[in-house]
Image (tube, rainbow, N blue to C red; front, side):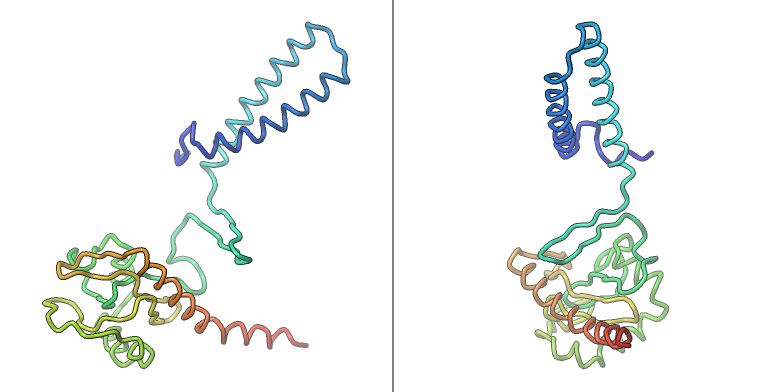
Amino acid sequence: MKVKIKLFDRILIKDFLYVLSVAGVLFSFFSIIIDVSDKAKIFFGVGIVIFLICTYLFLWVRANKLTNVELTVDNSKIVIKVGDLFEEQSFKVIAFNEYFDTIVDNKIISENTLNGIYLKNFVSDIEELNARMEMDQSLEEKLKNTNESRARGKKHRYKLGTIFQNNDYLLTALSKFDNDNRAYLHMNEYIDFLLNFWNEIDIICRPKRRLKSKTQVP
């Protein structure tokens, strides 16, 4: 078993304290209504301690084997998974910089990033992808400005949160780039990204939702 959660992880201890509080209430309740000998109390106490140790170890093992978690945020269900993103069905989001650069040279784009892995292993023709981006009407509408002083990479800078759909991959402009090709993103820019990103996601998914609703009508 690969250890992802430490034995005395803060969240793990918090979960255990919840179990301990419930066990404490039950133990107090039964100790009041059940009259047992002192010898039986000792055995019972030892059994409780062993039970709590086993419970803590069970919670620790379960936490390390956990592969997905479901969260509900503002009536939206969010599933956090451990696995290979490229094996997932439906849409997959790949973060690009604001220029939608496609040069994987470990300077502009690192080959070890999700962005680099996608371009190297899942795009058969980079030039064809670049050409389609240049001709895309939706991208043209989100064009922010042109950086003619940029020495390498693309010169068109797009609004953060802009999405270019390439089959079931959603390429999105997430990070800004400085003159030394270093990615950065301030908090207010990240908020703007989220607002624009989710708006474009809604536009992309809306036809799919409409089609699904129509097929459900008898």
